Length: 71
Ligand SMILES: [Zn+2]
Image (cartoon, rainbow, N blue to C red; front, side, top):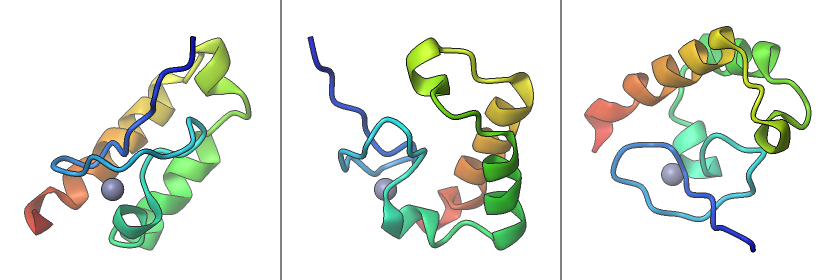
């Protein structure tokens, strides 16, 4: 069964490929330093194996928090 994966930004409901944390529009609002942090800890295939590291989840949360104000 295929499930839709949605942009993780709060208030955004765009469907994005599972490998992406956010849609392109939301991602572009995330500060560069945080984008780099998320990329650094992203492990190819983690969305399938469900093995995202705590560091990745932390960085992902920070990124989500950083654009929360814009909604
Ligand atoms: Zn979005």
